[in-house]
Image 1 (cartoon, helix red, strand yellow):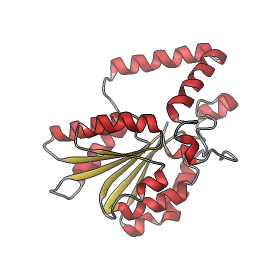
Image 2 (tube, rainbow, N blue to C red):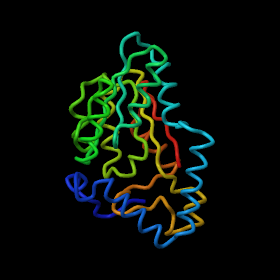
Image 3 (cartoon, rainbow, N blue to C red):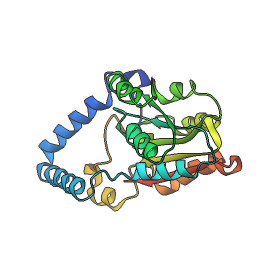
Image 4 (cartoon, rainbow, N blue to C red):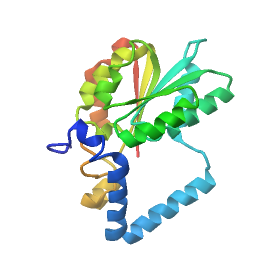
Length: 233
């Protein structure tokens, strides 16, 4: 499933920047589905109280970085880095283990990239203000140990081309970790057009476990000793 005539990359910098569209979407849902919106907000608050600081992407990233066979400083790339909180969290937790980590982010929204740069620079990292296709071309080959795309690939109009672009910048044992809405979920089937995974014009591609597996096979990642990890929400 994909959105016909998705926005151009340039439109994502300001006009359709994530912080703007997400705010509009939240207001829309609160208006049209007030009960569900309140229940969702309540569930998130309960989760934050029961499991403060718990983040699956952080746990996965830390585990993969620890397994990396390198005594030198490692590098992690977060595509769609937002305000940089994920990178800062991972950096600080990894530092507690006595390891060095160089965090890099790519963010297309000008406003978020500016805020992200301040946060990530504080821990010695950098942010590239660009779309993922162009931003990744600024990085050296064989330089990144882990690439994170947490709720990002559904925003990308050229997912296969982007993953191909990312392959060369990974180290020989580098890993790409994806987290996307699951178009095959029961929630989507039951809720139909009201499924929370639908967001227009933000989400331009919709994935299932089978279609992500197809992407991995088309990339032939296994032949390059590289791995594509996937997660759905």
